[in-house]
Image (tube, rainbow, N blue to C red; front, top):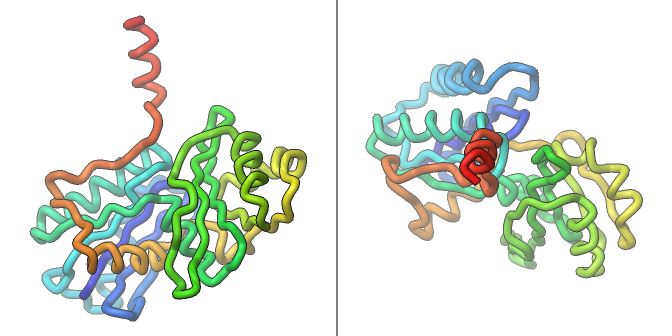
Length: 234
């Protein structure tokens, strides 16, 4: 089994190749360039460095959302193009599920938070069971950080926060959290395509794929342009 994984859902652009149980390559950039400038060159570099034959790839995994509207569109278009060209399926992985995989083995409740702007974050609540499987305690949703903190307090367990929403949410977290909490260190705190690929491998084994033609990102919220159009029609 060979999977190419792509995540451009946030500030980070990251690409990886998983061959059976081995991550043969991962290329991650967290810098102020648009993903349209980085994704394909990163994939091409991985292809050359590992002598990857694209005809041997079984599926393309992609962070399917939520996240940046532009970033999701770029990642989905890249995955879709590869899937159509190679005639292989797409594995759609929820962005915050993949982000939670960074914290494999942690016993706390895991809360990835992505800055969704307009005072909200994209998030979900997770834990790992004794077999190391990712368990969804609360599926992905968009909400203000104060409400998120209240829901975590109700669970009543220590929490690990990670994601690009942490820097903009620390003041609210400090004021609203009544249970113990910590922040993930830098190497665990942002999207990694290797984590996405690892989670996607399980999806692939379960047959949870879609055709490249049918793939589309999950935004969770309307874009600003859609909100403006809706406002104009009301």
